[in-house]
Image (cartoon, rainbow, N blue to C red):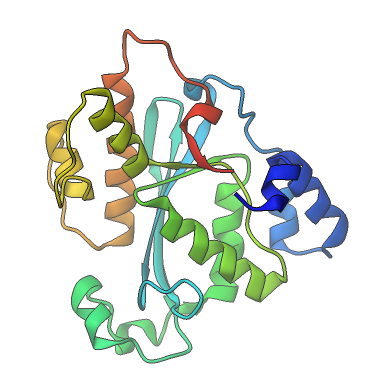
Amino acid sequence: MSIWKYLFNLEERRNWYMRKMPGSPLRDYYEVDFPSLDSDWRQIDYLALDFETTGLDDKRDQILSFGHTTLRGQTLLLSEAVHTLTKPTVAIPEASAVVHGILDDRAADAETLEQALPRLLGALAGKAMLAHHAAIEYNFLSNACRRIYGYPFLGPVIDTLALEVRVFRSRDQSIKQGDLRLANARDRYGLPRYPAHNALTDAIAAGELFLAQAAYRQGKRQPTLKELTVIS
């Protein structure tokens, strides 16, 4: 943990950034209260989110598409599902195009991330971010905000991969290679397989996994948002 995070909690850092930054979509995001970390997880709104990118280096690579949908407590709202394609400033590497199927000609007519990012921040306002292997989405988003607005993204983040690690540990089970992949985690809860590497499909898949993981906890003490959060 950095000294910055050790000395100041999430709300204190949010307020510090608001005092420093000029008006922007990121400031608008910060002006909406974060969900209380002490709240029962069932009383929180979440934004299940996934990115497809030109690579895995969040400092060098770029966001090509993002998909998200809202979870209101224990309900996933498909009516609020959104998929957005964005135009990178570099050629899309063949190695990543093979994975997500986004080619240069398809991305050429898309809007820029600078144009699309305000809507994503608006969707995240007042919610906890939820993703599978959430450090990827968090770091890409934070670096994009730093580049475009001059300040990083902050907010409570829940990682379904980290929650699945807790399930394995609670059962005293070893984790084998591939066990924590999104599709394999969903298999263990009897959830259907979806085509991978579409940002919206993966966001919905992560949201459904989170609800299945929550159902596994039924009959146990229900955790607070703070107890589920991996980044704050």
